[in-house]
Length: 423
Image (cartoon, rainbow, N blue to C red; front, side):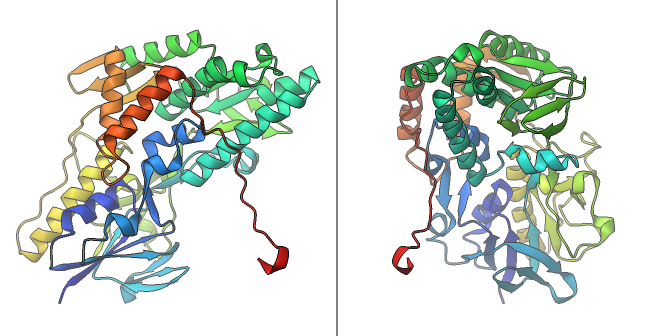
């Protein structure tokens, strides 16, 4: 009988695991996800800033695997695992497995700050990115109507908490949006009242990257007018005031939260299987500790066995992709009764875009910046879009938008159900 592999989560890890096993007739694979599409998180900030459409970085699971007879999709939100029955519970039914792979990823970490959780704007998925896009555009419209200087300043201020790649890329995109678009399309707004703040508790931006990348990001963003506050953290958000750790506050109606993540909860696993940051502890083969036939891959897992990464691997796309592929190979080796291969991370570097035609790239033996780095960023971020829109068309669209500074999708779309006539 075919072994049933149940994969919860259609991110980088889950998708690459499926791609590696999709033609192996020994396995029957079911993908479980609360959404019916895969999306590309590194570009989600461009959706939030109305630069590209969500469809550019999203693709339906059923279409992605429509030609693979051993792959099926179950749309449902994960609720808990029941190890003794070898099943999982979703909000749309119970599913049995021979092997369970948890690839749920992470969620936004608000560090216990309830007001921030309720009122800040995270950007972890497509829905949140579209909500943020609507919020920014609606706030601009309100600022255009407002005659009160104090209120107008509060409406135009944007605070971004988190100086990692997402925060830096978002700050640069918003600054350029203000410079090239807002002054033309919102002539009523006094732009001298607006400020973009980028706040981080660490002493530098892009802290995991090279000193060159950190310095370049700081200088380029500062030149764009972004106000950078380092060694300072957000402590609260009350009455449209961002309260800072140094006692100061910033009035704003837009606090964007990119400051941290935490593993998603997986009810049913032993408490001893959960480690720091609510990540699931796994061995060198991604098998969950103190559990049988359950594996975890990607951002949600914490592997402490690799000597080079004693505190676990970074929560990056490349780690997830490589773990998915390695686990697929090990499932084959299990069936072939061969010795398993432990996971070893091949660090391919990191990168961040800062502004128009400006990026920073850290490769294992080389770091560079500027236009060449921007082209590298563009090339690397198009390659993984397998099964999405034409890569060439997408690249041409990006070049056109960057050159003209005129994306035309700044639409405020707030879907409502029509209740008239029972519809």
